[in-house]
Amino acid sequence: MHARKNKEGGNQMKDNELLFDRKSHVLYSKPCKKEIRAKIALHYPEAEREAIWEQVQRQYAVFLSDWRNGVGGTYDCIAIMSYYVVCKAVTSFREIEEMEENLILPIFRRLKFVDCNKPFWRKLMYKAFVRSKSGCDKWHDYEMAVAPYETDKPIYYEFTACPAAEFAIKHGLTDIMPALCNVDFASMELLHARLVRTTTCVDGCRCDYTICGNKDPYLKEHPEYRDEKGYRRNK
Image 1 (tube, rainbow, N blue to C red):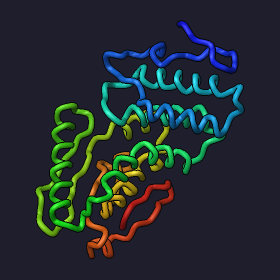
Image 2 (image 1 turned 135 degrees about the horizontal axis):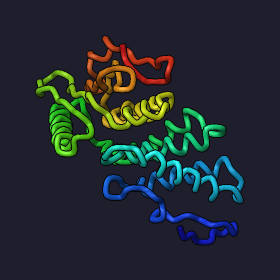
Image 3 (image 1 turned 90 degrees about the horizontal axis):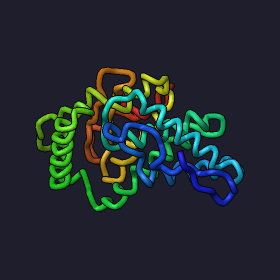
Image 4 (image 1 turned 90 degrees about the vertical axis):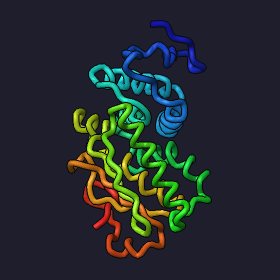
């Protein structure tokens, strides 16, 4: 394995030198790498940062060594979990939650003109979820079902299989899953919408998504709270 010198004088491992099956798996995204390295810089002196980052890289490769195929954002979740395992002594639940928000929310902030209270946007959102389901059906990673659209009623869909949840259960990392799942609530809030969720794939048989406008009376019947594990959920 070759490595290049970094500015601290040590060796820095390149991403393309990481040993994992690249026919079955992909590398974490560049934004995710940037996010992890930024957090490492917050917690460790400069002379130690490259060594810590390399530990995260190697943990990522180890995690993929016995993991089945998957696509999309699951790999960034695995990278964040790798950071969590290596840097558990210095990181926190809120920091992991923040990292996921920094990766997911920018695209939703660019869609702030969307208003789920208006029928036009609600129907458009529904069509987007149906497209997502067709992707899941094609890739066979997330198992997704979308309820038929009903005017003036919340949108409903659910996942009955989630690779990120399966991974967390397999590796004993379910304690950090709420920090990765809670971003679903934050993303909807940027679209003048609200997510109502009662269960997830980690602690139940499905992850449910009931989505309505932030002015919908439905919300009064389902107040939000944080459970003892840190999940945002609804009654």
